[in-house]
Image (cartoon, rainbow over all chains, first blue to last red; front, side, top):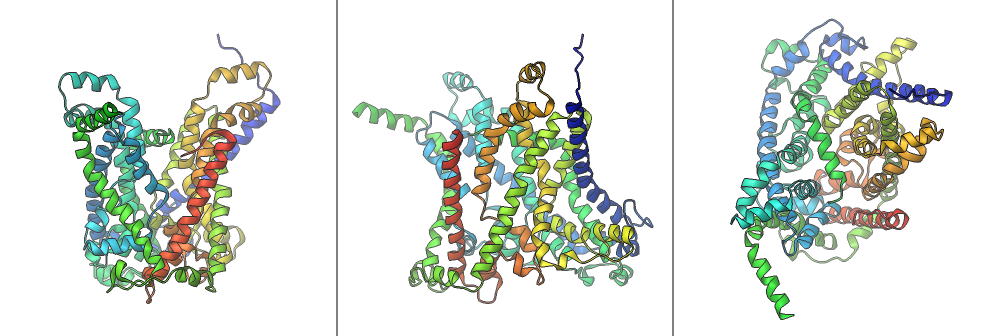
Length: 297
Length: 308
């Protein structure tokens, strides 16, 4: 039997007000997303004259056609994919190895080494010393400038270390040590298979960062063939220019001026596709990761 | 004493594999985090590419003085503080309020839907986010322009061209993008609240709002103070990438902040004064670190929660 919950007037008022506020906020977040999608499927003229309010007006695919026919978008997409996959692989393996070693309570000096990592969260050399370093290493205008720096994020290291410490029981290590398992074998055979959840979290955090970053590419690269998608997006979305010579279809070239707005909307949608495609699969890990991060390591 | 030392060396020797595995991450952090910190010395030198970091002549605090006495100094500091304090005042409490309200919602399905949708904007990259702002707030073709014309029949005023509105656009677009994400941590803390507390309070006649004040808020206070310390420690680091992208000639008087100025002085202007740029960014880092320490100390005094 359920005990009937008595709602007095105060409670009703409370629930009505919070539901209204939350709904308004929900719609405020949702509306621009829907608007962008609708605008991307509308005709250039309809977008330019502000006719799109909620649903697509004069349904058309011209925005997408132009984007797919723009060479730089493909180039950027390919480069971004490369930076994201290789960069994330480097990030995750380095972070996991370090996190495992630092999770071992029987490692002399582990607190000091951990401090070396955490300090980098709060203080850094800044833009120019980093730039000089990249220059000295000969990384300028190479893919290494985007792949190597930032390989270990201190915050992610703390998250991974906390996870390993809290979820893999110490008895497991003791038992395997009795069986003659070395520290290295223990990592490969026991820790890695038990760390799938945290690997997913790290892949997500690092992956999204690589996919979305633009600033390092902007200062370290000048060869356009190496540009990630974000830099081409910046040129098109901010500087208002899609270089007509990079559009391969001549018919589309002529229409370019008319369709500037709709192209931008189509681009915004396309650049979001990779993240939105994997989002449903990683959502639960994402929440988990944020929560592990909130526990002090 | 002797046996203790002996056992320490023995313990270190026993763990040689771990040290070997740590070697690469350690070398990495030294090269990519600590070597640039050493590079900060150029803030006290007159750096020239030919002479290198160590060969360049010392100039003492000349670079810092140059920045403090620059006519732009006051404006840049004011913009930095305006954006960061405004942003802190708005984007710190809003996720907390959002989480508290969402937590008290009775309809589980609706609650999940709201949560899932409000995370999504967090994954939009800065470049696309700024592109989105520029498109949506366009006074002719964006949401703002279309709706304004729909309801009033007139063409809207161009809010992107008014520098005074820059801070509002910056801060509230941040709320739009970040609230769902920032709330996760509070929602998680609220999920851990013992439900019997709520039952007992209900029997004692407390209504939902009173339970929010006396049960829910105390439950998230430790999390909130950690988040506040981190936010205060980041006060001087205004979302640099976003501001840089949102800048244009019309709003530059309101949008030039320390970090964008560092970038321009160091890399994006014809002069490329590495030393001056490093001095400005070092000034920024030091202030930041001091603020972080103060916030951490204060929080420890008040409720025992600190990050170091």
